[in-house]
Image 1 (cartoon, rainbow, N blue to C red):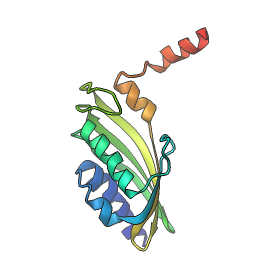
Image 2: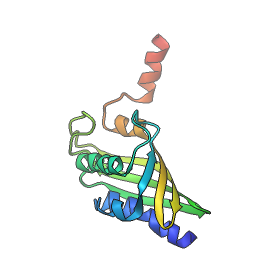
Image 3: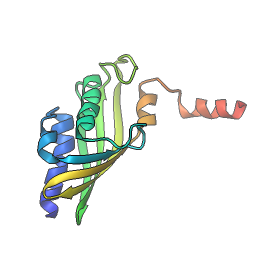
Length: 149
């Protein structure tokens, strides 16, 4: 099961995110899928909202690629660490295209039942992403602002 589970969860970053094959979502994610995304006020999300989430980022970074750095699996759970890279050439959450090339690390944990992903927890360096886009100042500047009160 471990090898099959690793192959299954790799399809998410490799086919869904890098290739942009959002139709794969219906193949690998259960109809009852739940996405836990702590940075979102709408957390948790379902399979259709996950598709919209992917499409939002793929339209903002049309050359988006995900490199899988590590995958481990045990029981019904797999954890995956990745690095996403792309050029900001489309609007993202109200931020107009900057043309900036970004590299963002992240991790996901998947729970699998009957050969389908039923639950996923995702976390990526959102602060780093927006700093690379120039939307947020460097941490040093934020620190100085905080000290000034």
